Image (cartoon, rainbow, N blue to C red; front, side, top):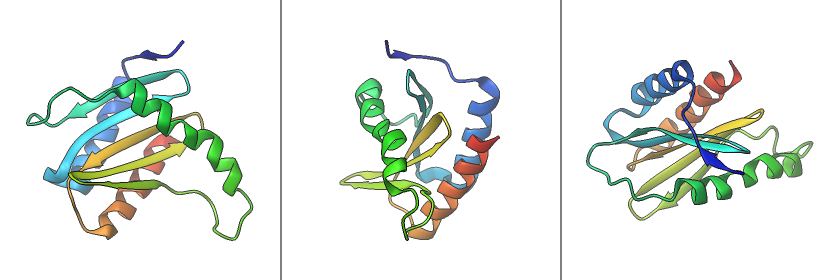
Length: 125
């Protein structure tokens, strides 16, 4: 059974620090997930808590399975998924058995690459 859960405080602090450093004021939210759990680490104060985190997590968990579909292709190793929306972006990074998605306002494409690289390092610890 899937459930919302608290994220390890040390991991949450490190993810928040990395995201604030790379993204700055454009940071909207940070959510950590596994196959069984989901936990929101950060939500910017001007946003409402209306997102269906469990529904989002169900969708983003497809990344656990789709990584194997791209393995050994000429594309190389999976790095991140970036989704564009009318009011912002969602960047998903998966490493091992857990992942994180970060939502942001619009920002330069180079910062998305920097963000995904930094998140992958944190998740690898």
